[in-house]
Image 1 (cartoon, rainbow over the protein chains, first blue to last red):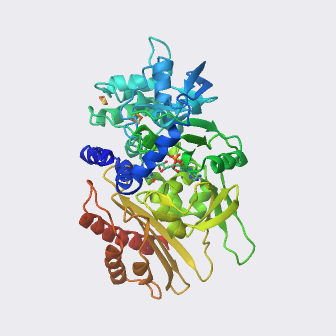
Image 2: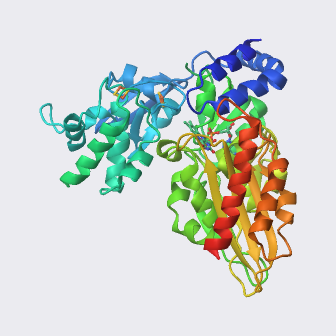
Image 3: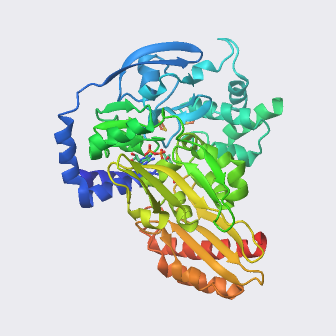
Length: 205
Length: 298
Ligand SMILES: Cc1cc2nc3c(=O)[nH]c(=O)nc-3n(C[C@H](O)[C@H](O)[C@H](O)COP(=O)(O)OP(=O)(O)OC[C@H]3O[C@@H](n4cnc5c(N)ncnc54)[C@H](O)[C@@H]3O)c2cc1C
Ligand code: FES
Ligand code: FES
């Protein structure tokens, strides 16, 4: 029953690519759900309530050591443990892109990575972009000038995605910019000003 | 939406990982790119008791083109933890396996491709994914390893149904071997991938991977048509493909094959596309891929 409700909710919230989870849930509700859930509950009693790990990660050039639970998402680690709330959380299942950070230089969903996995890795968040408190990164400056944001919720994820994209492809076409942007949802701008901003960075050099 | 509690183990070696899985069985899950498993855990539709992280293990990623002596076919061997990003940018794949090269940019978004792995994708066995269908068309083989030993499973025997594969609870998919088909005087093979999604990077409403082999006289000696989001597993339209063999393919034969394929696919239908629309897309994409191959790729 629980599972049926789930599948209904996902079908109704027809936003983007939830298909995989819809199928998961439908499949579970039709076949394996009750025994599987029971099995999980039995076995959960054997698993300690907290599974603690001490990790060290470099974020924006600074090294941080924290003891965290294995179930903590990297997005929550960045926001709640380190207080770097520039990284936003929209969906927590990989669809919206708001939580995108650089993980060893590559744009990555921090909501689909466990904090414990970041042990020994190098992360970069939107807080690491600006040159100084008074001087924006050229990409941020371009967003400012082209009006590439309205509410700003999607912006940190887009900036981190585009920083890596421009490093790899400094002279992109508009089509390439749009393709690179496909993993970031923006509810406000209609994307045009975001594309303009990214192309303007290119124009400046 | 946070994962339920679990025990996390960063595996240090393949042997250790296999021993752990043998010990925990179904209670444990492998963590590869996490791009399907972690969202499922966040939504609590998956609640594994133990996660065995494959990422720290050295030597589980990378690809090689194996040149075999004389009669045996050459093979592209890809290790399971190779990320989409690597496949997408690999010059070897672009040269030796153009079908896979053409498919990669359609798989999810750049950020997902930075983490997602070929092994994780195939083991996840989502019939809406591009890669299982492509592996069926390419007639790939998968190596499964466990403490009990290793075995090879043909892609065409691997996908049982939705999210269900031939892998046993203690088995790890470690390698994917794709036979290559370099041109010979008597056989040339050309391929094409196309899909239609509402938005770039979304799971497609329908997609086709096509492969055609012609002999020196332009007669078709082999054809393969694989469909995604067309059933509980990736679907091979064997009758449609077989209808092309033994002739030099005309526009009318392409039309006829597309009509057969339309009835061979078993699409589920969803909020994005009705079954009738998915069948329509299968027809159109069959025609487009075959026409592209025959008009532009030989
Ligand atoms: C927003 C979004 C969009 C997406 N769009 C697409 C798309 O268009 N097309 C598409 O194909 N995919 C898409 N995906 C899914 C993506 O391709 C996943 O990366 C892939 O399905 C799973 O690979 P992974 O390496 O992340 O595996 P994981 O998520 O780590 O694992 C998936 C499953 O496979 C098991 N597993 C992993 N590795 C192995 C192994 N070596 N042997 C045995 N079992 C293993 C795990 O235990 C788990 O059950 C999308 C994902 C997201 C979040
Ligand atoms: S919060 Fe939406 S992708 Fe991570
Ligand atoms: S500016 Fe509001 S979501 Fe993009």
